[in-house]
Image (cartoon, rainbow over all chains, first blue to last red; front, side, top):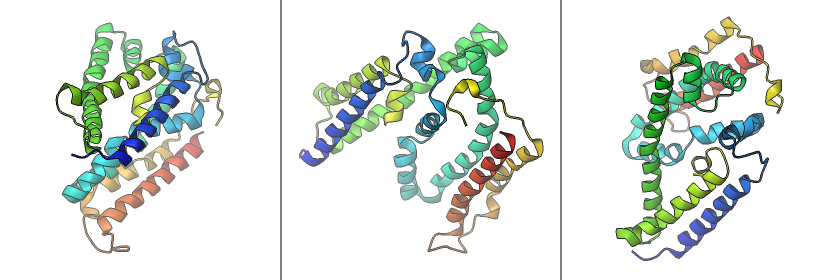
Amino acid sequence: MALNTTALIVFVILFGLVTYMGFAASRWRKGDLDQLHEWGLGGRRFGTLLIWFLIGGDLYTAYTFIAVPAGLFGAGALFFFAVPYTIMIYPMVYIVFPRLWSVAHKHGYVTSADFVRGRYGNKWLALAVACTGLVATMPYIALQLVGIQVVIGAMGVETNGFVGDLPLIIAFVVLAAFTYSSAHDSPHNSY
Amino acid sequence: MSDNPDDHKPMRPVIWARLLLLVPFVAMLWVSSYNVAEPTIGGVPFFYWYQLGWIAISAVMIGFVYWLER
């Protein structure tokens, strides 16, 4: 396939911009990143508006913007499940989240495993929750990587063999670096 | 709402208002009530615009409950 120069330039510029913003984020409202709640939760001082955007970024992903419309286009009304599903999720979130936030803030919980350990006092249950979270994230990350590879392939870059994996490896290392160096959820909210 | 998390006041649950939050569940799970093509709006079948309409309705309901409880 011929190299699509226009698409490649747009991609590289956007990737550069997002990477720059990712690293810039580590200097914005900087806290002591050696503390887990500073690194993971921004020291809990993000405020209502920013949290609104972050929750939006968590809920509405590439799946919402690409997979669901594509499914609707290809398979029809079946994929409209995403709409009533979201309508029913928000009332539940309204009941649960403020209470969860208060309890987590009071006791200094950072992760769901912290919460389970504090609430049920069982470290094995907490470990199981932490492991489930890690394992459940794996296919999600794999999906993102396959998605990036498809995008890179669509621009006409070779995606077979080791050389074909190189753009993907570079993209992932950059994302991992700014997630490590800065803040809450960076790659997820950027893509 | 304040930007400072330490100012966060616990909400006072208003039970009758929270029952309102069940309405979107009833509406969305009762599929046979909206699984029809007519009437259309601008060519969009009832099935689609009805569900999209419930996004706005449920948002207003949650906003109302929040306004009562804050």
